[in-house]
Length: 283
Image (tube, rainbow, N blue to C red; front, side, top):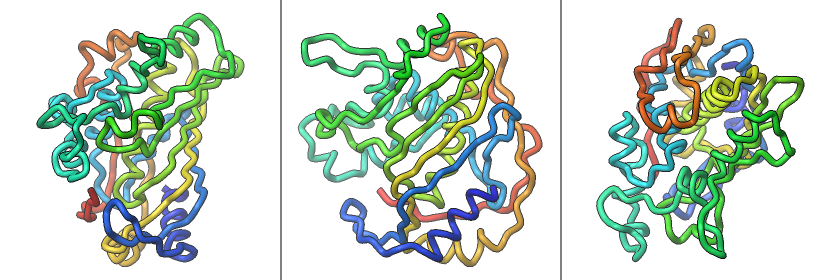
């Protein structure tokens, strides 16, 4: 929480106004932010200075793991986060690659599970990483990337959190996640939860010990219509202690994550929080 609040204050103190072409709004922006999550000691980075809906964040991550490309599949898991980009983004609605209602195109998990090869076939990046880690392999290239410039035109949104790199040292699994752009009041806690949970899940199904998760953000911003709520409400609240995330120990493989796992298999213990804040969302 201290690192999150420090970043919010830094944006307010040092940020530069930037006009965002996609949303038509101004953003107060800083370049380069780094956060770290202690997965080894179960310090779950859930925001406490406002109520945060952690289940939707993990549900979205589960959809990425499964390679979903349709907002209805995410809704079935408990995440409505893709409804607007799939159905209200005018550029995507006019795109000839859009297949109809709720279609997201070739974004995020689609790239992670079925990256198209130019000579035919697909690459299952996540499957390869898990197979390597289960066999004790770390080739310093255990990289999961959603960033495929050759197919940006075939999806409703370029990935913001675009690359996850896994590393092993002495039986401990580490994760470094890279994000090109971050809506700090709304999106960042989703991203924090997902980075933490991805490392926790990968360690559990590969039999490795979870270590630290490192979260690197290039462009961190607060939209102009979010600024008063962040500055005058959230930053004036005292944070509570971090809660703990409990994951069903019966989850032991990628197949489990692909088939039977639901949000009932995750529990947060000891979550104290202030009242919710309704930040505006920019499509």
